[in-house]
Length: 234
Ligand code: CDP
Ligand code: CDP
Image (tube, protein in one colour):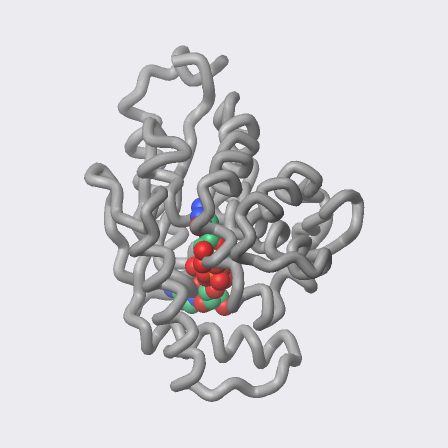
């Protein structure tokens, strides 16, 4: 083996992937890659440019002009597009409503997946998204499919918005928006959201963030213990 281990976390919107992935990475001393933030960053860039989101050639062109970077030495991880801090801007309801349209396009996925794979070339990384275990890192040592009921995910998203000081959102509207995004993400032709055949499913309705964190850390420790130590120290 020529790289350190990879933990892949996939699942529907609001299941807790990024919260859990960030804490797993911190606990295990691994790098965290938020692939959803990359699709969001490009969506923000396309909206800023005023280009029609369905104009695939124009979006593809923008995908190549959109340089996405992460700053991880800060308390809250910062996302940069061509040097501009877009950490907040990529979480607006407008970006959220359009990201699945951008993420369904072949040229977009090709460009972003290539970047994701180059980040993970040496391993030692926790990656969350929709197609990480199935497509981006199919040989990841630990693959998690993290879910929760749509009611629970809407409730969590409502709490998130509240804590960010955003306008109160109605639970039924949140459920509808999440349902619609999951539908688009799991029915698109290219790399749809799916549980990898070798992924472990965690249904988190009755679990805290710490419960999910501990479950994944244990799975990782079991897995790395069963791989021989010297093959990991590269
Ligand atoms: O955190 P949240 O569930 O709102 O979504 P996200 O992980 O930030 O991802 C935003 C969107 O990006 C998803 O709804 C997908 O359309 C797209 N995405 C994707 O297609 N493939 C990935 N690996 C990650 C995200
Ligand atoms: O990345 P994804 O869209 O899957 O979810 P997220 O952005 O991490 O949001 C999940 C929210 O639910 C966060 O506010 C977490 O604190 C909360 N939560 C969780 O992630 N896991 C649990 N088991 C319980 C709550």
